[in-house]
Image (tube, rainbow, N blue to C red; front, side, top):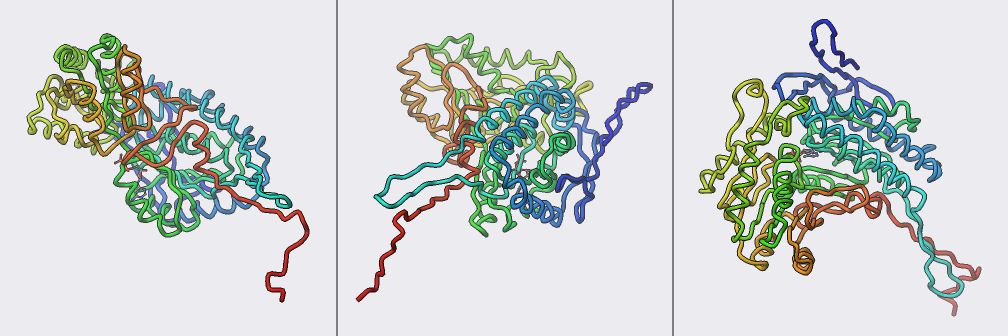
Length: 503
Ligand code: ADP
């Protein structure tokens, strides 16, 4: 594994990892291939890494199955907790390197990547604390009978990870799965394979039993699909598009797999006219353009009460226009590129669709083609006003820095527009009227509702979607339930069992 800055030339050499991490070892792909990864800020190849083939997936699943039946199954909960703490510590000790690689691979601002990597330690520590508290119950049923439940791991987990925040989405799956005692095959997205391989390399110092964590990359519809179809995998934990989730449900029906899905969103972010507008606009700007718009929690439908509509829309446009778009490594940059060429095209396509639908372009609306940024996948922060919730730009997830500003007249209309979507991941609302804030929050169909804040996501707070935004919850105490199943044990204390057929 090489990633060297040559002092003399300043040229960054290509990062290479020509093997897959299976059974605690680095192995050459059996039927996979070597693939290139593009730096989205330059459009150039910056890494070459191994991709798994179908037979490599089979090998990784075998490794995970063997590990599930091996010494790992006899590890005490306290030992599993200690392992989680060792893994968490990696994210503190190696944050700079992991952040640099992730930033190169998907274009996230280096400082955002650093914050994002560092915080992941907390997720492992949180689930470490849970590993020895996965208690069952005793059930009072009748004299002479003892009934109790124990909670056992669901089995081998396939963790299918997207490209927008690769390590964080992996962590959201890996930490609760390990706390529960499962074994895991992680498949990273084909566009961003690098940081998870580096994480695997660091894992070598953590005394992970071979096969408990396996990490490969590979093409979704073939290699990801094999992981889903494999009868040795009991559960798929997936983050990505809802269409892929639907496909996974069909493929995984083969052995009635368990699922956790975190899919997209088209989240309403509502500003009432009694809001603290200065802070609401701060949040609206961030919720529109964070991670270059490549966050499923984006407040991509900004609903603004008509009496303050023009003021908010114009100020948002002004803020969008002054955002410093730049290279991910540039400390002064405030927004980076789209993570890959396909996403760039998708964003530009939706900008054209919005223009064609008659939305009013207030800011941005194009790729940045001049100067240093011209070779990368940069898009100007884009604001559309006078958007009708029926327009495609308001209904379909874009995953780029494009926000639709939609007017409303009163609470009822705000709620109706907020809920008029197939999605239901997150929502935000701004009001200084405490009654209104809770009243509206209770009627919004979303897994998370933020009041007077936005995108506040933490290890201890359940996160997941209503409707097409997903299935199950990640983070929080209940996340671990998705990796456990309940066994009921019933004991006859009497020593008798009557002859049912006595004459
Ligand atoms: P996006 O469109 O944002 O790339 P996807 O849902 O296509 O989202 O991808 C998310 C993850 O799902 C990636 O790791 C990808 O390789 C994987 N994936 C895509 N298609 C399939 C599939 N048919 N079966 C399993 N995994 C898939």
